[in-house]
Image (tube, rainbow, N blue to C red; front, side, top):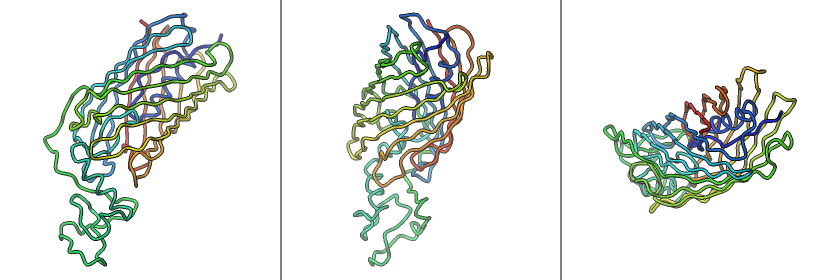
Length: 326
């Protein structure tokens, strides 16, 4: 008897292992669903990293989603509750992006200086750890004379020792359509569209103050019965902040999982990333692993660990997800 993937957990803020874990563990363990169902799914995720900055940002995301399934159509909504230790990382459909939040103009100017833009032509930009070239005859403050390697240059924003904010993030709305529904073959093909509404405060890192939207095509299938593979590619239109342009990225995720017999346990590995979101920065790239467990009919949980491989990703992220049919 073939299984169906069912509604996914809410899309994590660039935590590919948990997203793929939700899909693959359900495909590996869930029983066939009814023609119509309502599902609650959620996740709690903690991410920490320095990103582009000298100061570390720690974020926690509690995502709560409700989905309605009717045949091949799924409609879902997700509302995140966010904690951040700094306002420098903004929540988007492309994950947590190091925009600088209320200092977005300084991030824009500093990024321009990293790759030979106007800031590199002899004028010092506050916050840059790499000063302009001395061959231009510019006078550089002694405190700025730190010159890290080209691959690890970071810049400093104002101290946020007392920031620590908790609030509601931008809600997201998603529609999925199964082009090849589960149960007809060992392969499932799904197209999806998603939008994020700008209701959160961008100065606290809970949003960008603009609409995001995009779509994706995903394929999941079985290899040899207990081995599952997953792939997804998407395109996202990210709304710009007032003083910082966000590029519209392609996204991609690939994963492989193995169901451990009839135990209800699945082991998973994934690689996910985006094309460049901020000019003159490395694009986001993450690798991760997860374990999923089916508790009972229509219920599952999963744990994930993700490692960031670029300056646009958190250094490490830990995740826990759950799903239950109502």
